[in-house]
Amino acid sequence: MANNSAYKIDFNRPTIVGKELYYISQAIHNGHSAGDGAFTKKCHKFLEEALGVPKVLLTTSCTDALEMCALLLDIVPGDEVIVPSFTFVTTINAFVLRGAKPVFVDIRPDTLNLDETQLEQLITERTRAIVPVHYAGVGCEMDAICAIAAKYGIAIVEDNAHGLFGKHKGKYLGTFGTFATQSFHETKNFICGEGGAVLINDPLYLERAEIIREKGTNRSRFFRGQVDKYTWVDIGSSFLPSDILAAFLYAQLEARTEIQTKRQNIWNFYHENLQDWAESCSVRLPIVPSHCDQSFHMYYLLLPSLEARSGLITHLKERGILSVFHYLPLHLSDMGQKFGGKPGDCPVTEDVSDRLLRLPFYNDLSEADQSYIVKAIMEFEPSHIPMAT
Ligand SMILES: *Cc1c(COP(=O)(O)O)cnc(C)c1O
Image (cartoon, rainbow, N blue to C red; front, side, top):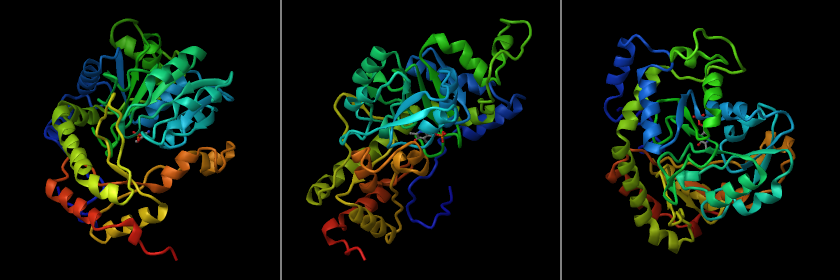
């Protein structure tokens, strides 16, 4: 594919693995390009079997999958939802849309996942859900999180946008919560442009999930011949993606091993080759606990300071390499402040947000390009960065 970027090495480049266009043409020739066609069903089956979950439903995005979860949980104004401040905006916006009040929890300094030791003190009688985000596809401490949720009768919705096929203590991420959500946005491991899925782990919600996803109608049951007419039965919206997108996605899912192997190699290359430099410059590399099988979603560095990070971004940019920072603390955003967020609420989040830098990471990043990136990084010493002006 042509590289139209101003950079020699981009941060992300979506990759086609093989059969995407062929499957898309099939989806069109099948005469069923709307939602829930043959390829959507193939994706559902593939993910249900691979993860061992009762039901997977493709959605138009991870955001929409989260909105479906908020509807399924009957979130009403005044309900509270606990969420890490260090995450993407829609992890919580989906619940705020239903009137929920976000309750922000800080992250652990090692995995950058929500700090489970701080959860219990945040629970009130209005708490309805905990939304753990498996940052970089490294599992949160699910034993503790599930125990607290069970003790207080609170739902867990795993935002697993980064973590498809990652595991925690041998169990797939996305299979712990009442629900989990996936993203197939072009920046994720498996892509179809824009897309997502909701994993329904509690069969109690199965029928209603289908209804909410199909505009509040029982159309899915009608197509299965379980009712003789379809009608409006509940609230809902249009959360199904076109089968053309599912066709694209299915080609990606079929290449699961190929994609994950490539990403694992890229991750390991950075990790092995940056070790000595990182130690000599007080840079922290990602920590993956031994009980976590990660999904190889991203590679990041934790620089010693904001100035060092800005210095490295510029240093890499001058060498044609695009590196990017990540989440700004949600509790300090304009919306977060409206909900009472203030500096000091989540100190680890505030600190990490200033110092974290993500390196180029995509399936087709060549070893030559990776060597070039590593060499460029090793020419940078945070102690030599220019003084702030
Ligand atoms: C990408 C992402 C989302 C949103 O995914 P979309 O499919 O773009 O809606 C939500 N949460 C996290 C943690 C993400 O990384």
